[in-house]
Image (cartoon, rainbow, N blue to C red):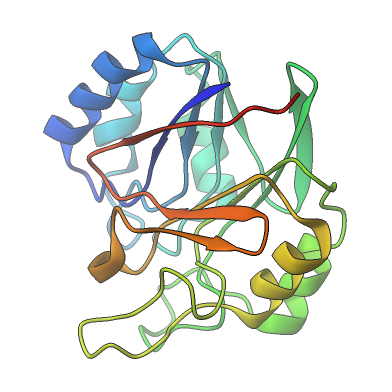
Length: 202
């Protein structure tokens, strides 16, 4: 199965148009949050992305709430927004959790969750599927400009326990495009340019 993965568009309409073009070549599109900037401009990219007809899985970032994202994607018929819930496409289970995890230093505007809340949101994740999260698992693709790790322990614990074949995240801009293996799981910090990944689920 071929995936187009992206994150952190932050109102970048040129990047959104590029993703629409790339989507023709894949089976499933995955958007790992931060379509808006501080809750503003959510429609800027989502009105463009709504042209994508391939099944699409989205989670909110820390720049938009799940309610805002669901409202903004009402016209994107092939999109499914996940946050503490899952779905299935082509026999493959997906689980999604958005927001900044752990709580960011950005203040009240940021849509954040602590590690305890995140563990609860992750608890229903199936084994061997696809995990879509805005924040990276701790010590994977989560180093900021000062090379400090900024990821989530609860997401890392979930990956080690559930062994998803693919983990798509974003949030930490300095590691955009980076991929690592965490035991059996491929972890990708996607970024706005879009990364195509092929996973064999047989």
